[in-house]
Length: 116
Image (tube, rainbow, N blue to C red; front, top):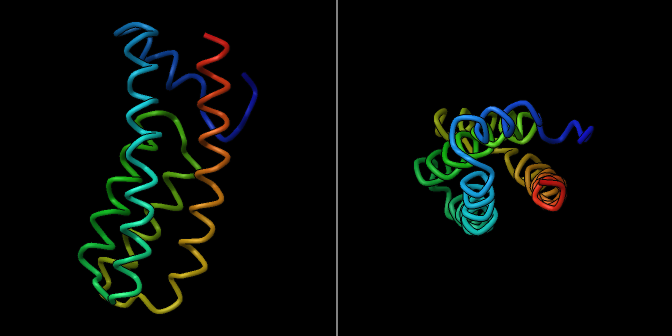
């Protein structure tokens, strides 16, 4: 796997300490949970709810990092910091960027599952 969207070393390390089936379950859980977290970001942004926005971004950051989706995780961390600041001004473009990155991550993780 050569897709820079996902660090295969992270997934391989997970598989070596658990097994491929467990990694597949983690991927499935992430792919199931992330869309609702992304929706929470949008809802919180619309409502001006910085704390809910921060929590959703934090979960996306952590979950993405655990699966080696480092560019996605970095973008989510930037949103988390925006939420922590309490000022959501200008966050809409970054939320859109994260949603686009999620589509790439989703494809890369599905490809990884197909390959393992």
